Length: 387
Image 1 (cartoon, one colour):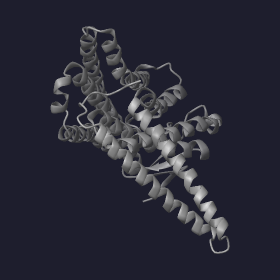
Image 2: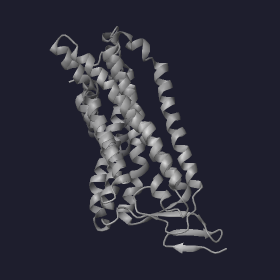
Image 3: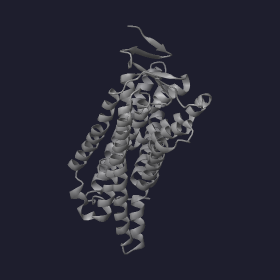
């Protein structure tokens, strides 16, 4: 049995009509190959911003026990999902931009396809959970603490994960029924369902139908339910007696509405242009497919950081604490090293500085946490302050 070598692709003949695929070749953005090195610059910046921003959100929520409330726990879930979603696609994408077409083995390609679609569905589901949180906080504030308990949030998180796996897994198994005997080059930056299915020699109609149905019954239904929840929220808000109460309620939902618009606008536009935009240039379709996976993770921490007072103040406080501790301990280490330069090598200075920083920062944060616990005792659940 011999191997055909198509560039970086290896196809092993199995019979006269089909072949056993062992590798795909991802080419990047068709028609823009000469510009990919420049396209990689904003994409790299956005990826770095997404990882740092969402990492800060997760760190702040995990560190501060006063933020262990439903709204912020859902926000931490969204941040974690965003980091995973862009990490699944962007590093491989940047390799293609920098080094040219890159091979991807059959199992690796299907694994990437699984995580891309599963994380996209879980992102939509987390946004739905956050909309329900806002609905309860505004429309039924007296029941907020009893309805949205810690155990319920844990169950919701597991349910979101289970739904994503249950919906995406059949799509992966449907790929196994396809036979590949022609071109095995994917003109894309990552592996996705229809990009793989369209390379098959036999009919991929079932893959297309399942993909469309799954998208409508998950992401589409999520969007309908989110819209319904905000219609109920707006109806309740307009019935509030005072202008101040209405303004506060709108501020409570402002960040979430911005995130929803960014996510679903890009997702639906990309989805429908891929399905029905026959006259849309291919490079535009591929750019949209990349942007709808990268822009929301980049924008989410920025939007929530600006609109959510608690997150903004915690991040600024964290930065201020670290800066003051660094300045204080650097001066102490310099003073000690000045007294005994010959017996105090630079490696020992660095070790001592790191140890001092960690000790001082831990003490400051512990004292601050105790003060917040004492002052925030009896604080009602669901009463979130927004700027």
